[in-house]
Image (cartoon, rainbow, N blue to C red; front, side, top):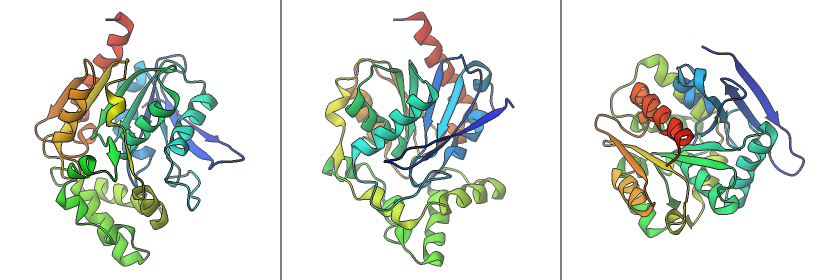
Length: 279
């Protein structure tokens, strides 16, 4: 495993952000953005893989998550999420980077693209894609097993929330996970305060119209057995993006990069390498 470097992006007018990176500092950057109630540790399989020998892997803790600051009332605006991504890119000097977002992280990635465009972005990878929230079309793609976890998942009662978080961790996977992996995931989910999880859902935004305007390569990855977001969302998103590449994993749920890390690494490597050869 290559050495990991940690950073704090200090900001006077916005939450401080925790970021980790690995791999050659002069290699193509891949900025990895985790999902709802997760942390940079969601990407630990990628950090501990040969991807880190070839690319500069950068994983941020979103505001409210992991070791980043967790203010109240700071989760409803696309511009705020976009500004967090921009702050990390500025602080770490990321240019021509690949922006990879998983689940809610894909929504944050689209927030960024809607706000700042693709001037600094070479390509986009959307995993378990969430293209909007609080709208009729995007809500229809959310799966019943995930929706049934609310309102317990945002409860301020510790016992209620912990039980819901344990169920959420399970719903993110197609197959049962080893206990040590499951409890590590539960641990960093539990670090996220209820007000953060609640605030993240209190949004109404759709980026479906943006998709047809994307002029950079896009890889859309989804698990066929996703119990959080229907695979139909991935197909609909890919259909809207010119020349998007769609990869559906037959034996995976909401976390294909964890459930089949080898395939994910192989496909992401090929996708990023293709940027060097051009169209």
